[in-house]
Amino acid sequence: MTRVLKTVWLVATVAGASPLAAQDRELVAGREATGTLGTPGDPNRSGRPYQVWTFRAESTMTAQFIMRSATFDAVLVLQDSAGGFLDVNDNSAGGRDARLVRDIRAGTRYRLIARSQIDSVGPYTLMVRPLEPSNEGVAGPITRGQDITGTIATGDPTGAGGRPFKAYVFEGRAGDSITIDLTSDAYDTFLIVQDAAGRSLAENDDFGDGLNSHLVFQVPATGRYRIVATVFDAGSTGAFRLRLR
Image 1 (cartoon, rainbow, N blue to C red):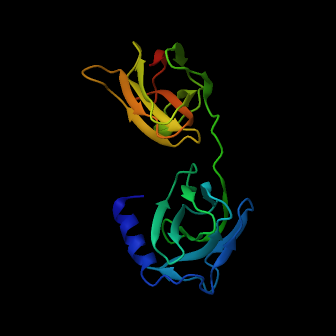
Image 2 (image 1 turned 135 degrees about the horizontal axis):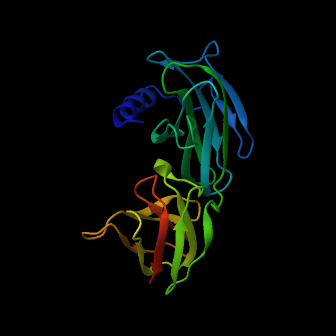
């Protein structure tokens, strides 16, 4: 979603927001809910119908809110209980589906605005569930002091921009500073550090004058992290070397 569109919708939804209004629906963690945009009586802004859901967090956790539709480009807006803007997403669940990842607090109520990118209507599903550790593309563990050689190949899982990747997990301790190098003679490398759920924390394309990647990363909290070895150009494949110090 462009910054302009995000700003326009933010102004529209915050203005006149009424917590727990009559049209609000209740969302329960782990239970898929269904709705249909364009139902008679739906509120709308600038000709775009929307529906409001409320959710009360029973526990403190990192949650993912997912909205899917086979008939329109889904857009999901997260607000606090008073209608204050927290976040917005358009296509992060793949295709035209929306996905928001957010740390939520036990006992706190949130509002979700479900709408389409334009004025399209139709059925959709909505769910909130805990964000689980991501095992996608994991080739194995890596420990400090280890060098790993691997190959990016056709058929590897792909991430943002359709880039194939391999991921390696490591256990970090809060406050540790680690150094990561990703090198290849076959392509322009791209290096990403993610949390256990796959959220990007740091990344590097080119270090210095070359096409290799280098990161110095301060571990924010004790736990599991993912080092993602990937390519800058989505069509690239070949051997790489990954070093963790």
